[in-house]
Length: 600
Image 1 (cartoon, one colour):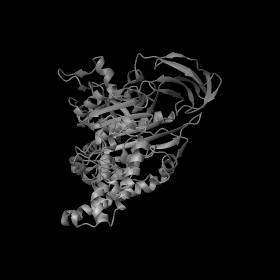
Image 2 (cartoon, rainbow, N blue to C red):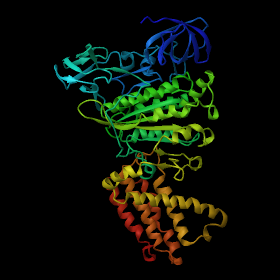
Image 3 (cartoon, helix red, strand yellow):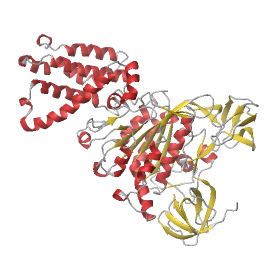
Image 4 (cartoon, one colour):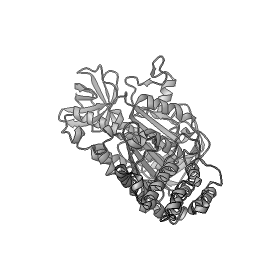
């Protein structure tokens, strides 16, 4: 089919209208204007196509050319992804800045600005033009292979990067698949199919708006362990689940997501900074290369993919950034890895949708967001999951999606938070009052919840403690009762409360200070394994048992509440060592017995 070039008829910010594109299709990538700005067809009408342009459109004129490419917006997937930093369209920030393709302003070395008409990155630019990979085949000439089958692997950072038959390639017979060193653009073998001979490469491309297919979806059964006590013990998220982190400015969303990137037990981390402040992303990009991976002892960046789309970059690229992140996460899931996809923040993505929708003159929904906001968010969160992936040998992979939301003024009733809440299985609400009180992570125990508790309880009970569910319920009940009692204390004072309620207040305070608070920058307390988390929780609850035993003894209850062993409990979260669980269990035994003769 002959591709006919069109001409611009109107332009409004990132939205451009063009005539003469009768051969174009919705979702097709086009090059706009004399500089070839990257755009995508989002609407077709008789005689006119509407295009969203992913670059700055200043300087475009009516009559400028528009050239369709014949292909949709796609990501390049293969060796070279790990450790790379991309913009919202998978153009490598580090490589383009290093070779001078992008402009670096004097005195602002961290601020890279995209050149006009940079276009989509090809496989060699996106994945590394010069690096060669030592391919080790796992199949031989003559083997029958089909979509998703594993052909072999290359070593990349801490993993074996699986080379797969692309999902859209028909089943056929391998003509050759020799070992050797290959560049990204070189064929590693050839596949004979019913329609012809298909060359096989280390890299493959996939349209970002189309979820990669899987063989079978599976129920979740294991938690994504984050190292954060309030999450792992009270509001866990499953591997293959989805969670939302809403919070106003200064409540710690970005720090929490960075802690998840560093300490979670995911094999691969894909971090998407969508519409965040440039200085915040610059700080992230500067700090990540120096972080040590606690799992391997090597650099954390070696198993991380960073996508940086800052607020000063073209607004239309924000939507594309999360789609590229989801596609890259699916690619590693298809290799059988457990992937954490962190998006910070989906509110900026939704704001981009609102701006584009307004320029398209679409009927607005609540607070000006487009009526399809919910379906777009659903399309993103539904790409999470645990599945048996395509191909042989059988592999099980998962994507755990964590989306940060930035509601204006911390209002959780706004549309993005509410739409996200209906889609995610865990909800970690960040409380501004806790943040102002320097309580971090500032996750509200009264607003947060997890729908994965029943599915994950068997793992916790078999691996950690048969009574995990009861201990979790007791801790949450204590915190809820404390919130209710504090309203009474504000009216009548703590001394007017019955002894039972005084014990609840004291133990809840211990729970907050000794268990829920966690120092993200402390080398000891930044993350804890689940065994140590549970041991600390048991120790706090043991204090309740000891204090409750003194109820009815007014003369000794006050002494018990001032026992030095309680101060020792408050300091226990700074303890470390291989014998930590045993030390905490010994402390719990001392806390159970707070009789007067046991109190110095």
